[in-house]
Length: 292
Image 1 (cartoon, rainbow, N blue to C red):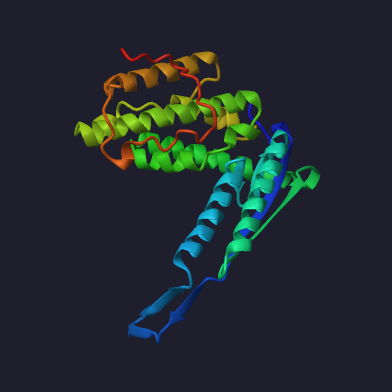
Image 2: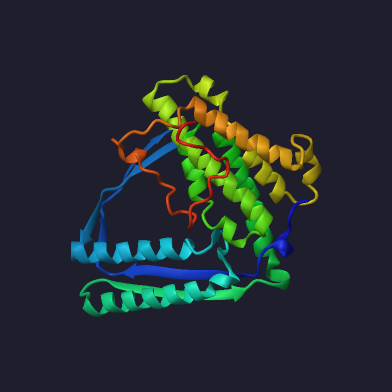
């Protein structure tokens, strides 16, 4: 049980850079320094001057969009974006589209200029250290997700899931399925936890007693390397009954949270921040119905 870098799908490491040059100037005044014992407080007055506000805003929006769309193709890591080899065509199409957009902007802009470049490397041999690093980060992130769910921290759940985009694209099928189920489980519970705490005024401790982490535990078990596997076996069995129990736990939690309740969103936070994050929607694996 457990996976290593050699079990992952063939991958590329993608590094990219998109930056805005010109169009903005910063003017800093003299600093004001206050010293009290070993404590020092420094304050500066900084003035930001934009040559053309709309042009600069357009440039920064393009930069942000490029960053988001490149990273959404795979898994962000400290070394770059880890990309499933089967998505190379998607990367090349995106790069061409964005290069055209950058060229169009630079041709018409008067004060600002965008610079955009992408390089990719096949991960193999000694470069597998990049995949090992990514796997380690994935395992740590699943641990953070478990802690957020166990704490009934719906904001924490959302933040962690945002960082998990692309995970299922590079994992072997069995591990990918387990992680996808854990993510969908967390999404459901984040919405219902917020409803219980904010809308219904339930007590945090009561909600914490109803959440389920079993699908996350199953995903963590699938992601463990061989050295870590025995420790996980101490807390959960590896047979299929655990996944069934996990799904039952999610269903029970949803009943407690009154999953059948439908309300019109009244705040931005009511919108599901996860829609589209993982690509196609994950199947309704625990067969919840509107009558639950």
